[in-house]
Structure formats: structure tokens, C-alpha cells
Image (cartoon, rainbow, N blue to C red; front, side, top):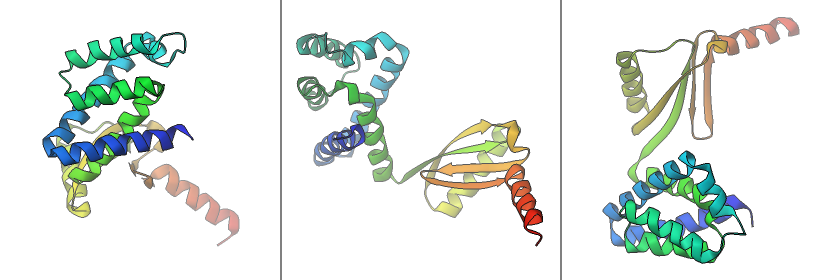
Length: 183
């Protein structure tokens, strides 16, 4: 079984439990996952310990217990992480957290995307673009703004698996191909 399938199954199972308990529980689990991701990203040795076959399951549970207590995780989340330790799936924790985040966004009607421009946009322009996109999508959008000078101008919007490339670089490439074909 591939890691993404495993991650989706575990995330789906925890999400279903959270949904039964209520929307607040779903958000709390999402917060704990975000905090776990931050902790693992900040401490690469933590990730190595959780993935290592040399570290015993009990030691991994001890590490997770300390982390989860600091994060004030509920009993369901603690038991879930212990189950991952028992099944030697803590290596997939970040993937599970990512899948859970996607399920949570879908439940809340939130769309996440990345808007890339050739120059940095001020907060006012970012807000106006976000508002315009939200009106067109009919949903709340969480946008990350990036700068990539290689696009020359315009924007590249990535939302999920869709890409809208309205950059000057893309337009020039289309024009170049049109000229090559002699149209």
C-alpha cells in the first residue's frame, strides 16, 4: 500500500470520528496536526526518531505523549497517535496531517491556492485580488502569494490540481509557437 493511500485512510478514519463528535472536535484535531507538523519541521531529529526502526514503539509513544500533552490534545487524538506508533505508521504522520487538512478544508468550504506574480503586491492589492477570486469561486479562499520574476508579468494561479497561467512568459510561448507554425 502506498504512503498516500495509507495517509488518506488514517486521515479519513480520524475525520469520521471527529465528525461524529462535532465540528469543534474536527478543528481541534486540525490544530493539533498543524502543531505536530510545525514541531516535526522544526526538529529534524524528531522526525528521524519517529521513523527509526531502532527506536522502540514505547519510546515513540513516550515522545508523542509529551508532544500531545503540550498541545493539549484530546484523548481521541492521543489514542490515534498511539495507534500509529503501534502500527509503525508514525513515519506517515505528516502525510496524514496533510490529508486531514484537505478533508477539513473541504468540510469548511475553503479553497487553498498559490498566486504567483512577477513583482511583490502590497496588502491592499492582495486583498482586492483575494476578494475578487472569492466572488468568482463563491467560496472562501486561502491564498499564499509568491514572487517569481521569471514569469515577466501577469499571474499564475494554482488551486488544487488546476493552474491558470496568465503570465507574460506563457503568452510569449504561445506567440512563439504560433509564429513557428506560420499561422
